[in-house]
Length: 189
Image (tube, rainbow, N blue to C red; front, side, top):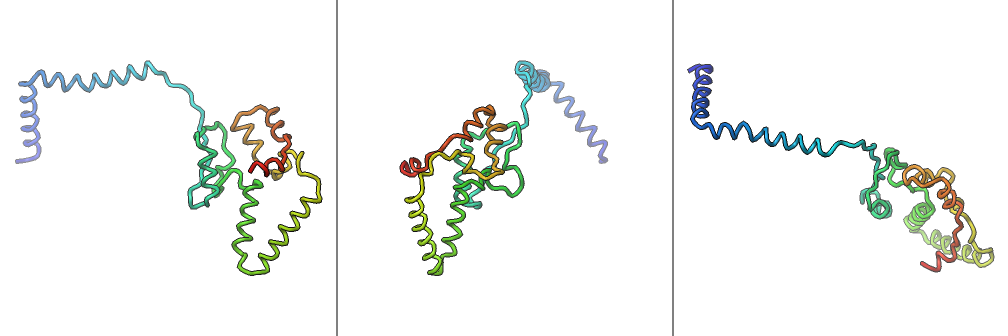
């Protein structure tokens, strides 16, 4: 048999089957239409609204290191959506605050401790600690320095607070000029 004869017989068989079962044919035709009209009614009852483009803060993976990974989990726990690009969206940037004092202190300590296989390195590190202790005993207290003094010149914290956190300029200026009492911070740790 040729293809066209088989197709014609199959269509004839399907037509006679459908003609004999009219209720089933009506249900097969109306059921998709019913579902389509439900979708149309839901779409008409809930109108679309304009949503701004979403920028999420970057989150480091565990392979980036323990500190950036934990910082990404804790700082972005609510998974906020910002209308502007975040500072960490550039390629190969792990954290938004990599140049902060804490990050630099930890990276410097890690460098010293990783290369501390020689005895003279540990000895010079102990000398540095004793010199810092003497300096802290003889110098005036470190309280009264504003937050701005602890950040690098190109730190993006103020830009982040203005653009992404949508804080007013006065509040950001107050935060940047707020004075930190390091002695109280150290004693509370």
